Image 1 (cartoon, rainbow, N blue to C red):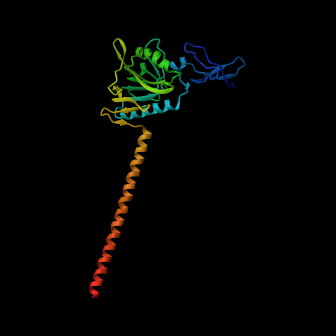
Image 2: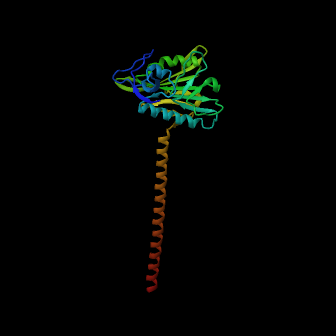
Length: 280
């Protein structure tokens, strides 16, 4: 059997909002289609917003550099915070299948799960099979896709029983992109707004951290109010600390060498003075 890769136009759907000029703006998936002539076509099909809401395994979703950077930062901080809990996992861009009838799977940007019995290489985290659901889900929006995070997922994560849902929302104010945090905590009557503190920070109970926006970027703080940098920031700080220690060590050695030279010179002068006294 021969496989041929072809491109197809976007499929129709409830959230079909493709751009004819850029049909693959949200991403793509490959679909294997058998033809009547015995050939098999591997079709690259554009994703729609409906596909972003309910993805399939193997979907390729496009993200901006800022989106990926923020997701990496949160994942790194959360994993470090939960490192001592062997039942805790932090999944990013992993499909989650629910145990609620008729509720399709989602692909959250970040899912924090507490109580996992055995870590696996999940492509889909099956809540029914694993016996535990995410304690925290975070979605990082873009202006083009924010609507499904603010509306569809807000409703469906509530139905799925996710206790805490946080949206890192990008909005455009005066033509400038800005970040804001929207938090929702589950109650008996459904999601209620998570009230920030006086600084606008949101408390993320499952990871015991504050989440804030400063200078248009995400910053996590521990319970003591100390900022937690990402891996790159920590690596830079370590390099700077190492360089400072090396500089201090070099300065100490240089000072010791100067002191030793001064001691030698002092002894030479004392010897010269003594020689002059003896010559009289």
